[in-house]
Image 1 (cartoon, rainbow, N blue to C red):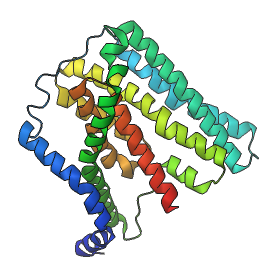
Image 2: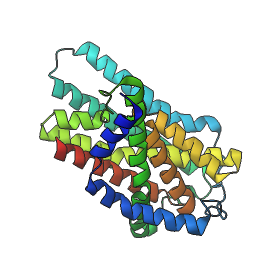
Image 3: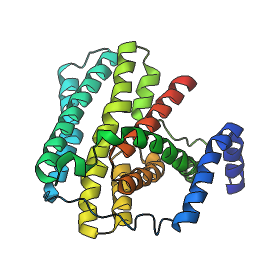
Length: 283
């Protein structure tokens, strides 16, 4: 399969709806570029958040969630190998929910102890919730064309290397929610994916890691890019990395621009909600 055939196949798969959805984001991004010189001046007034957090403390919640939870699931599989599949997935999801909430609690203790002015300096101020929600929608519209472009690029590269049968698999949570019809399990996955995980991952990656990297580099864009890369590769599905990296840049920029962690949380939550809705609708 040659390059021309691959491009033609991908182009045929792009619908008019895709173009219409991406158009507002392209316009918004064009306006942003014109005003901010490709971002060179957009974070000129940004400064590192004040804290005295040790570097190793940023890894404590990460280890708690991404190591403890898989170990618990492995033990469950050893002790109860004959569970029906959906019940096994339900217990796995409960384990993830409990582990994530525990990690959020650990992050909260870190913020309270090490951040100057605590949660306010961390970027959790409920007074800005309405403004951050509206800005999150605009930010997501802006980054959506680039996320789609990264998926197209990954699909092109995959078909070029592996052949025409290469496809980008759905995220694990999307696979689970479409392959199991039990209402309790679907509700649990939606709560985790659309509410709990966005809070945890933004508190961890933007709140802790990006803050720490910014404190070391003293360069906002450097910290955004490094954190976006870490955010992408922590997800195990490698074909999703380019799209997640693009999304991570948007999440990191929105945090530094607004100094509000609510904004990337909303962006992340809306993105996940759209993904789940699309998966259920198509399934």
